[in-house]
Length: 312
Image (cartoon, rainbow, N blue to C red; front, side, top):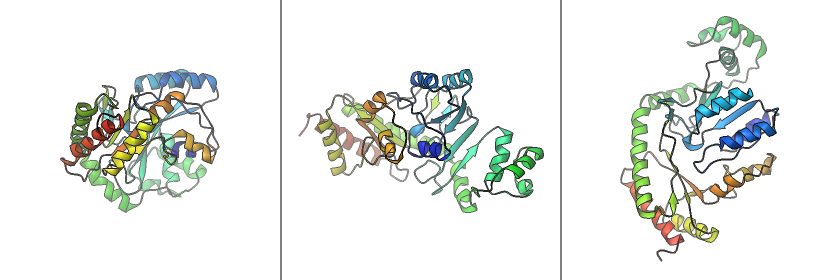
């Protein structure tokens, strides 16, 4: 996941408990159950769908209901991603989406929250900057009685989206299905090259068949290589103009070890670390031409063969 999650939890005065990840880059639900047992005071599961990778949501809901845990979904990377044909995020009591510049819906900065809990919706209206009885100006809102309670209880933090951000988002929401198809077509062309030319070295995780994916980022890991070969792979990619991002870089905000520098609790996550040790991330730029994608895939495949000692 990303440094913003433990940062947010700690800012609220709560304590984050980190859960292992699988080789598919989703939360390890067996370890989740172990952590719930080890931390019986846990109240909330903040589930991040990193890069749109989705674990078994049916089981997640079952675990949360069994243990009295409130589910909150971080869908920052999941605009357009679906579970069982429906936009991801509907399992949680509250879900957050991002429209920052690196996301599928790009408004520069911004994001939004969804909920079907009327009490929370009323509170959100007032957190956004509403005051007095201006809740009446909201076209979609919960019952007036709930808004009246929120008016008296909630601080005004002026967290509302500005009009320019909303105007940028609206057409990108409207044409999202077509753009998802474009992302996935290009993503498939990249994966095809990697599997044909370096399938014995590069592993691209697959998703649960119930997930509708969005190929806006390429995530993969190397197998059967040493740390030295891994370093050579990175050097070769960068030298050839493909800046792959290594997850265990000392500056990568997605590696939990780096969070310890600002006080995040230390957890041993050996399975996660072993995956991240050889794992990479690369944005699939929407402004590239279709033919650019197989071209940089060939660079990545070639770099892996160089690292493995198969070519000079």
